[in-house]
Amino acid sequence: MTSEQKPIGSGFGATTTAEEALGGRDLSGKVAVVTGGYSGIGVETTRVLSEAGATVVVPARTPDKARANVGRMPRVELAALDLADPGSIDAFARDFLASGRPIHFLINSAGVMACPLTRDARGNELQFSANHLGHFQLTARLWPALVKAGGARVVALTSRGHRFAGVDFDDPNFERRPYDKWQAYGQSKSANALFALGLDRRGEPHGVRAFSVHPGGILTDLARHLTDEDLARYGLSRLPDGRIDVGRTTEPLKTVPQGAATSIWCATSPRLDGEGGVYCEDCDVSEATPGDMALRTGVAPWACDPELAERLWTLSEAFTGVRF
Image (tube, helix red, strand yellow):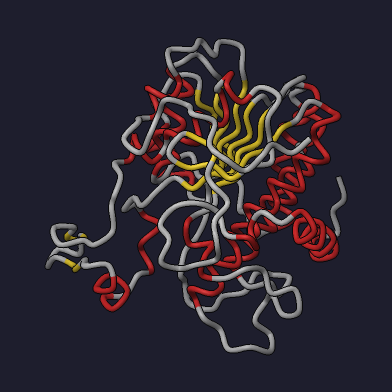
């Protein structure tokens, strides 16, 4: 049964790091797949899991960058994957399943944010495609390995940006309405949260639980598409060398180790045994809150609604041609 959407008193908070969230647990013999595990907070997620003894498979769209960032970490394996390419997703999953290994932790961390209008090979808007549909298909294809683990957890990275928009079921790909990069980002992040809710309902009888995670505000490569106008909205500016100056920010920012903490907590914490389907932040389950853009914490109604989760599931199956 889906857990209640309210804090459980984890004892952690916004400044908790990924290592602190892990709490010294030994992950020897465990297998993790971390999409985006070679960029941004994904690098820290990969590092903490691998140094705790887990084997971490990192699918990569840019192999050279992946080798440079995580190639020397212990027990890290790299493989090719483009989440906007259905054939690439199927090939990665086929190769992994051929190894016969279970997946104990699937952390869907890869994503794009506020990019110009781009479409994948099937005509889907890129943020909806890469952030949601690609992970939907990947999780479906890896399902046998998740069930095989006998207690797997799936973590879907969402964002406070889900408050920008819910899923537009009539026109998710901006084929009729004008494209707005922030509406598109918000839609994809709402989809991530709803996906975890729908997956948990289906996965619980098989020992697979799912969680969605808002990592917090962190400046990583995810911000590469932000314009100077976007930055100014949050009191940020661009330095002459292209780096972002955070000196006057109005947005509370986390460090990368803090940003990776809730993913690690949701994947590994025994406090979440028997729980699932909830939106988490700051290493705890979040409150369900009104759909007010001014709110900095909690999950909006359109991102934790079971009926919307089912509508999205049906839509995702139709768009991908994939069924669990």
